[in-house]
Image (cartoon, rainbow, N blue to C red; front, top):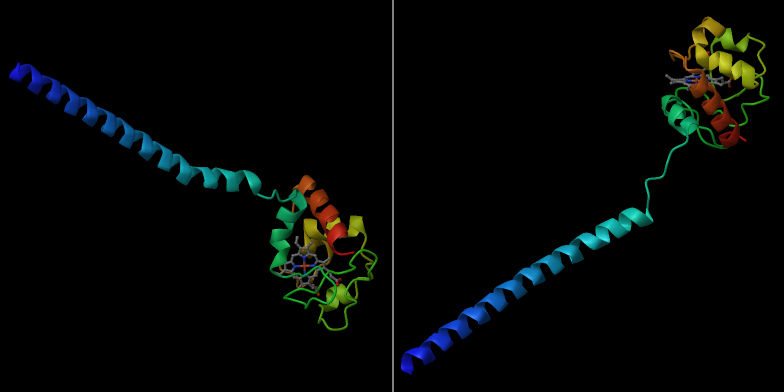
Length: 150
Ligand code: HEC
C-alpha cells in the first residue's frame, strides 16, 4: 500500500512538471508574438513611399539644382520657373558665355534636348552632366520638373 502511494505521488509530480513545462513554452511563444506584432503593424501602416520615376531621375540633378522659389543656387542655378524662362536669365548666377548667348527659351522639347546631352546641345556649357539617354527617363523627368518648378 505504501509503495502504491509513492507511485501516485511520483505520477502526480511528473504530471505537474509536464504541465508547468508546457505552460512555460506557451508563454514564451506568446511573448515572441507580442514582440513581433508591433513591427509588422508599423510596416503595414507606413509602406515605403514609392518615388515616381521622375523623382528618381532628378536624383542625378539634385546635387546641383534646387527647384523651389527662393531656394539658393547650388553648382547650377535654381530651376524654379524654368519652363518659359530664357536660358541664363538668373541675375544671381554666373552662367557660361555659351548658354548666355544661346538664345534658348526653355520649353519641354528644349529641356529634353538639353538633358539628353548638354554639351552637344550647347557646346561650351559649364553644366558638367553626361546626359540622360533613356527616353522614358527623360519624359518622366520633364513631367517631374514641370510639377516641381511651377
Ligand atoms: C554637376 C552639376 C550639375 C548637374 C549634375 C546638373 N546640372 Fe544643370 N546646370 C549646371 C550648371 C553649372 C548650369 C549652368 C550652365 C551654363 O552656364 O552653361 C546648369 C544649367 C541648367 C539649366 C539651364 C538653367 C538656366 O537658368 O538657363 C537647366 C534647365 C538644367 N541645368 C537642368 C538640369 C537637369 C534637369 C539636370 C539633371 C538631369 C541637371 N541640370 C544636372 C550644373 C549641373
